[in-house]
Image (cartoon, rainbow, N blue to C red; front, side):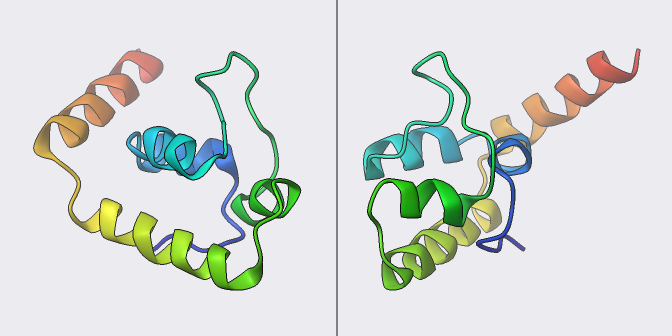
Length: 85
């Protein structure tokens, strides 16, 4: 389950589609070339989003997590295998 305290790094690892979602919301986290460090809440607040917006982001990201396309699951598994040797 995704919470506002999740780090951006963990969020992207857990839900690769979160990069596109966050970009659409105005929060660039990786695609710009400079990764964001910190939590989802910190990144959102830095961009001027309020607590209600952040609750919506958390809800949307949890929906993305539960409805993750099978290709994302396979890609995630393959990446983990490559990282562990």
